[in-house]
Length: 367
Image (cartoon, rainbow, N blue to C red; front, side, top):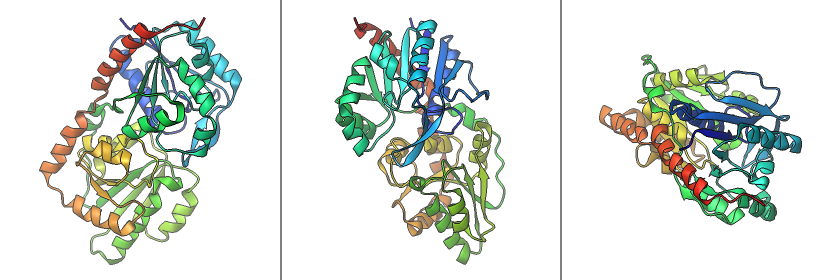
C-alpha cells in the first residue's frame, strides 16, 4: 500500500508550465486518496502559496536555461540537488516520482543514490545536440529509474534514443471537473484565446497574423486574448500593431485560466514544434470550447480527431481552421468534452499507483 510519495519537478512552480501543472495536479489527486505528499521544486526565493495540500520544499537558485526551443526555469546548483536528496530521505517515501528526471540538476543526486523505489515520467520530445553529447551521463542516471513512463510516443522515442531507456506510454491527466464547474460567461463578440509562454516556438505570432488578416476584411471581427508572458512579448505587441481586438493579459492564475477557457468561443494552440502532449487542448475541450491546433505530433495525439488542425506556422491555414471550428455544432463540442474527460487525473493516478507498486517490486538499492 502506497502511503507516502515524493514528487520532484525540475522546473520552478513560480513559472507557468505543463510539467509544473502536472506535478501539482498529481499532488492534489494523491492527497484526495489520503496519501502524504512531498513536492520538491527549484527556486528557494519563491514564497508563494499554491493550490496543493502537499508539503512544499523549494531549493536552489532559479535560472532560465535555453532548452528545446524554450527557457526552462530550473537550478544548476549541485547543493540544491543534495538538499533535495536529504529532504527526500527525511520524508522516507514509499516511492519517489520524478518528472523530467534528467533535466538539470535537481533529481541527479537522488537518482545516483537510488535509495528509494522510483518512477520517472518523461514529457519532453525532440532531439538535439545537448542530448547526444550527454548520452553517457543520461545512461548513468537512468540506472536510478525503476519504472519509466512517457506522456506520448514522441517522448518515448526521444528518451529511448537519448538514454537507452525504454518506457511505457501513459498520458498527461487533468482534473476535468475543475474546468466544467467554472461559470459560462460568453458574450456576443467572438473571443479567441491562446495561453502559454511568449516564445518563438509557441507560435503566438501566427495567431496574431491570422486574426489581423481576418479583422481587416471581416464584418464581424475576432477578439484575440493572449495570456502569458515571455521574451517575445514586445515583438508580439508590435506585430499586433493598432488592432484593438488583440489584447495581452499577461500571466494568469489557474482560476483565471479556467474562466477564460469557459468564456472563449475557440482556443488556439499554435505551437510550431516541441510539444510532446497537448494537455491544454483537453482542458479547453472539457470547458466546452472548440479547439484549433497546429498539426504537430503532441497535439495530434491529444486531439484524436476532436480538434480542428492546421498547417503549423501558416496564418492563412489558421484563419480557415478558425472559420471551420467556429461553425461547429453542439454535438461536436459535446463529443470533444467526453473525449477530454477520458484523460482524467483520477484515471491516470489509478495507473500510476500500479506503477508505484511495480517500482517497489523491482527496486534494489545501491550497495
